[in-house]
Length: 231
Ligand SMILES: Nc1ncnc2c1ncn2[C@@H]1O[C@H](COP(=O)(O)OP(=O)(O)OP(=O)(O)O)[C@@H](O)[C@H]1O
Image (tube, rainbow, N blue to C red; front, side, top):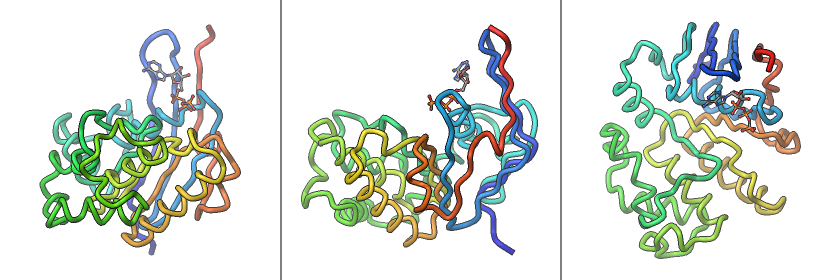
């Protein structure tokens, strides 16, 4: 049997307020080491689904299991700690601390995740190893994040997600700011690193051309039911 890193069952969520957008996900599973691309148009609910998985919003009903833990029963602070331990997140805008150095940024999730930190050992050495594996220049660790190019910032965001080998990486449109060549190079590095650590990857995009590189491609409309209140 394949070991699941992520299992959602009968999850539903309605945004409060006038938009009254509601999303239901009957079933979604990601296996250990599997790479999954989630495709969907703008406004189809991709970010909402990722927020449900990361536990930054709580479903109205249903179950979200990550690495055998039922996330929906954890308190808010326990969920924050759990996310820091188990999930590496790559945001669309990278969310780097602009005045922090590259090393500060890469080590940030470990501040809230003592077990993940313990797995790393020498944290500065591991940050430097990841920088080098991701093709960043030697000695980049002391550079302030806002002095980097967009492509370099993206690599730092990947290093930050990968450090300490969390079992699941969630990436929200991480290649949207790159041209086709840089996109391919970025994905090569991301896949090489996730394969090395047997990390699962769930990446969101609206670009179906990326699909051939993933183990599985899901369209959001195939796995969710969406309702919108009339305007
Ligand atoms: N903070 C919020 N408060 C209220 N409604 C929201 C909020 N965020 C999203 N929504 C609703 O959820 C719908 C889906 O948004 P979501 O961001 O999940 O889509 P998406 O597929 O990620 O879009 P995009 O590709 O443009 O990022 C929106 O159309 C909006 O109606």
